[in-house]
Length: 138
Image (tube, rainbow, N blue to C red; front, top):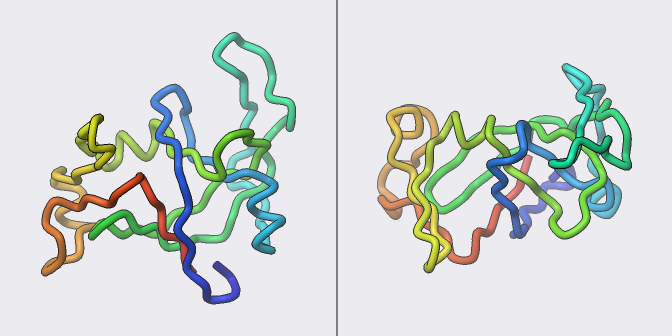
């Protein structure tokens, strides 16, 4: 985060979402400075209704995302979210192609992309983190 703190944040991984999002309330609570969106998004719900927050026109600056031994720098689109502060969508899933152990709620990062770009060598080789916690920092 901008103040140098690192937070454990619950996340939702949503294969029905085309992009990665952070909630407006989370942004306000943690005083994250925002940037204009690189590409404004029109967001619609699964039944075709427009999202209450309207067009997404802001994004976060690049932030460090850490799940187990998996690290990357990512910017999030800012919108109204209800139950979770962070949504990782299909753009993230396509890039990292993680495996999910549903019962244990653990992700494993075994893709060649992650091996080259995201995995920290010498740490937990399965890239698992209990409870789907996201560590954010800048």
